[in-house]
Image (cartoon, rainbow, N blue to C red; front, side, top):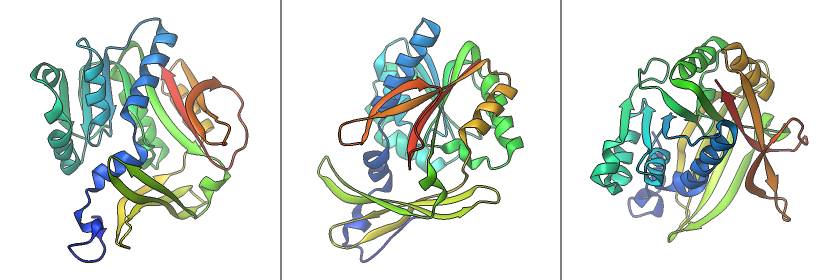
Amino acid sequence: MAKAAHSTSSLASQADRHTLYELSVQCPEAEVDFIEDAFLKLKNRKALSLREDFCGTAAVCCEWIKRSSRNSAIGVDLDTEVLEWGKRHHLSQLDSSQKRRLALHNHDVLTVDTARVDAIAAMNFSYWLFKERSLLKRYFKSASKALVDDGALFLDAYGGYESFQEIEEQREIDENGDAFTYIWEQERFNPVDNGLICSIHFEFDDGSRIERAFHYDWRLWTLPEIRDLLLECGFSRVTTYWQGFDEDDEGDGDFNPVTRADADAGWICYLIAEK
C-alpha cells in the first residue's frame, strides 16, 4: 500500500493517489481520440464497442461512453479498491442511459468472459505484468477471442536506452488547483530477464511525500518480441505508431505509423494488432 509521509496534516496525507495519477500520466480524451481515429482509418468504420483491460478507475471507459449514444464499454480489473474509486468518481458522473452501456468486471483479464467487442485497449504498459512468454501469449489469445472478426487490440509500450537504466525522473504538475511533483523511478533492472521494478512517488510543497503510491513489477518487453508474439497468436497485422516531437523536443501527442524510428533515449508508442 502507498504510504503518505509526515503528519496527518501534511499535503501528502490529504491527497488522493488516484487523482494524482490521473493528473500526472493519464489523458482519457487523447486515448479515445487515438482509438477512434486509428480504427476508422484501418477498418473504414467506427468502433462502437470497447473493452478496457486493466481498466483501473475506468476513466477511459467513461470517456468512451460519453462520446456517442451508440457506444458501449466493458472495463476489466482485478483490483476491487480502484474499481470502487472509479465508480465513485467517474461512473457517478454518468447519466442513467450512459451507465446502462457500461459494465465493470472485477476479474482476471486472462479468464474473463465478455461479449465480443470492436476494440480492446490495454494501456499504461499494464500487460507487462505478464513476465513469462507463455502468460503474455495466453493473454493475447484471450484478447483475440474477445474481438469481433475485424476487431483490433490497442497496446502501448515504451523503450529507449534509458529504459534499461536505474533512474529517477521528476515533473512538476499544476492542474485544477493541485500542485505537486510527479516522480517516476526505475528502481531495479535485471538484464538477464529484463525484469523491471518501477514506482511512482508524489512530493508536495510542504516536503511531504507519498512513497510508492504505485509500484510495478514488470518485464521490459521489446517491440519485436511483442509484435512476433501477436502474429504468433493469430493477429493478421501489427502496426507501430510513433509519437512526434515539437520544437522543444517534447512529445507532441501525435502518433503516426512507422517502420523505422530514431534510437532515442526514451520513447512511447502505440501498437495496433488487427485480427
